[in-house]
Length: 410
Image: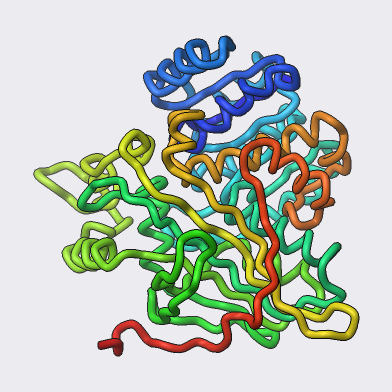
């Protein structure tokens, strides 16, 4: 398979390196980014660690014509979009113009509104069908692997699924006073907007980080977790039949929350332009410039991530609760691909999906698809081989109702 990856951040570097580790499948690998030095660094690491030569190019993915020209030059079988979510639609347009298969790990988000929804990309369904090409959306870890856990549970573990709680814990320590584990703009926009969850056929909105719950994470232990809205909820509501409730929880340390609240209070998380010394800047983009690059955190990172799905439903007439999860070690991922575990868990799933496409197991039907619409079984088998083993355990019960409001907590 000839593959083109756009985006040379932490997760993008993992995609490139895992492709290089599967050079028998990915016979041509090309990386493009608007930051050429990042591409050159990854190119050298692929040569040094895996003995694989990759191609690199300078590219502004906002420019559709330039992306079309690069695709026409490279002629990839698949384009994996690891760029910013703002650029999804432009890259999809370039894929349509060149009749190239497309994959991403995060859904489209307008640059000027902190709002992410799938409808912009779902609207491409008929155009991709007509072009005879496939788009696979949201194939990171969450979204992505968590969706596939749910699809696997629906196919193999339950007769009916009633409740899903997606739980995401990073129990690692990078030694920085404040830093984000993936793109700072996306991270802070995600956390500072209102949350919501789906219950009994309707969306219920909450204030940012309003609800907190102590969750016991496999191999990590109990951690304070906060209710957020996350994009996979939107597609899982459509594709998991019989669902009555779905929520998303993520851990944050108190120091992270304190820093974030201060930054928000002083206007540093604003996404609208302001004038500074006669120059127009966007505060959150300036903040991104002065804080540590997520990919730079890898070397000193210790601890683990623990991410999974707590699922309650009916099997053979009995109510059951199970957890499907992965635990990933920061030090081990650094040793393997010079990346921290958050980047690793995001980068391995799209490579796994690309392997399935190369084998003809996924992506044979043209159109736009979320990963839970595809057969989970070959993915679950391959993802374990690629470095993200998964486990299933029985639990006594699900996570129950909402409990503590954070601002009212002692």
